[in-house]
Length: 138
Image 1 (cartoon, rainbow, N blue to C red):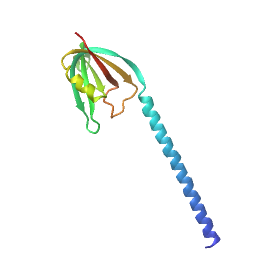
Image 2 (cartoon, rainbow, N blue to C red; image 1 turned 60 degrees about the vertical axis):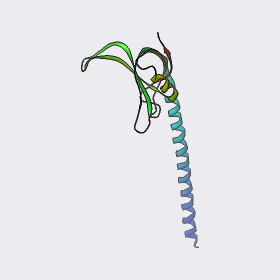
Image 3 (tube, rainbow, N blue to C red; image 1 turned 45 degrees about the vertical axis):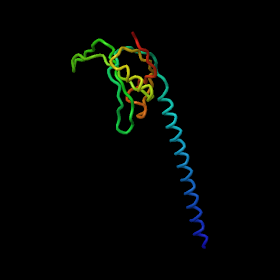
Image 4 (cartoon, rainbow, N blue to C red; image 1 turned 120 degrees about the vertical axis):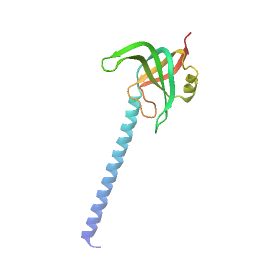
């Protein structure tokens, strides 16, 4: 093999090695950045409790099946465009066992404990409010 061909082949191998290293570093940065994004989005922004009548608990979704619910807080809200409507609070549930427990309280007055996260991931639910406990109110 001529010296010219050897120089071309060596240069080609070095270029391929640089490209491979670049994509490896890029892939590691994307994975680390994605992990950090999911971690930061799940930080608790606020937490508390709300009481009202449990109107609805359902399983929704096309790709990601999530558990969602609605609590009527009482009173009315007014909107200049759509008029007057009920004060409804929507929330998400992450645990299947807790979802099944909540189904027994539909139509009853309860107190729900929740935490609000910065951003919800599609597999966690529809709202930023994640309910984790309930207390029946009598």
